[in-house]
Length: 110
Image 1 (cartoon, rainbow, N blue to C red):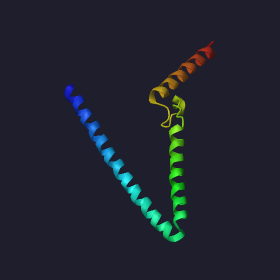
Image 2 (image 1 turned 90 degrees about the horizontal axis):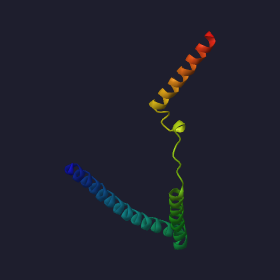
Image 3 (image 1 turned 135 degrees about the vertical axis):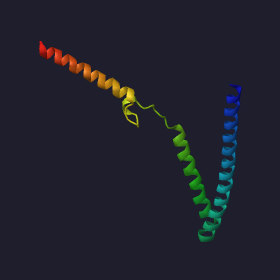
Image 4 (image 1 turned 120 degrees about the horizontal axis):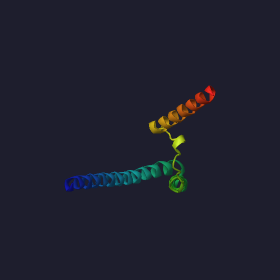
């Protein structure tokens, strides 16, 4: 049991390390792309235009991230699940329909 816990902790640490490395590489790449965009835009249209465009891109991305972070997620209802009704729900519906059919047949006999 202790070995299983140690394995899970090691996997979690490994995932965290790879995520940290990935985040660091993304930040470095973003820095280089920002500098490259600055160089191109300032050569074509001037430094003020380059600052405006790059600033607007970062502000727009930040606003989208904040909007996604504040979006409330409601749990799906069992009938509106994306994968459709579960097998247990389907069985319950079939059993209910069968019971109603049996009752209707009995009442027709009387």
